[in-house]
Amino acid sequence: MTILGIDPGTAKTGFGVIKKGKSLKCLDYGIIQTSPSLTAAERLKILNNELNKLIKKYQPDVLAVESLYFFKNIKTAMPVSQAKGVVLLAAAKKNMPVHEFTPLQAKMTVAGYGKAEKKQVQEMVKVLLNLESTPRPDDAADALAIAVCCAKTLDKPF
Image (cartoon, rainbow, N blue to C red; front, side, top):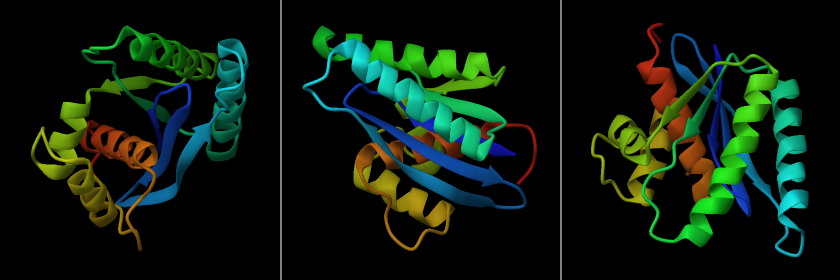
């Protein structure tokens, strides 16, 4: 089973692709970055196009996305919500199941502590996926953590 994990954002959307078999294997990770000089619509279009390329390349069986949680700043919440909408639409167009996880759930799954620091999460993702180096940037590591969380919560053993 291939899982595409997404940490949505307009400026940077993290992605992580993992394969779930007898163990977990990282296939790819990184970010989709857009320029602040573009309009919101142009940025969302780029996000859509890049997501579709990832979906076409890796043919994921499921998409795992970070669910929105409490935001103190509405200026941050709105663009993230818009980006998440693009992510959900891309999955829906491919009839791909979507699983949502909070940052707390992802941290609890990979680090064993819901309030783990970013560095702890990155290190545990590195260990769990047997990576040579710590995944960076944070958005990509978060997306991998979301994918790992999904893999560990699905019924199929690994």
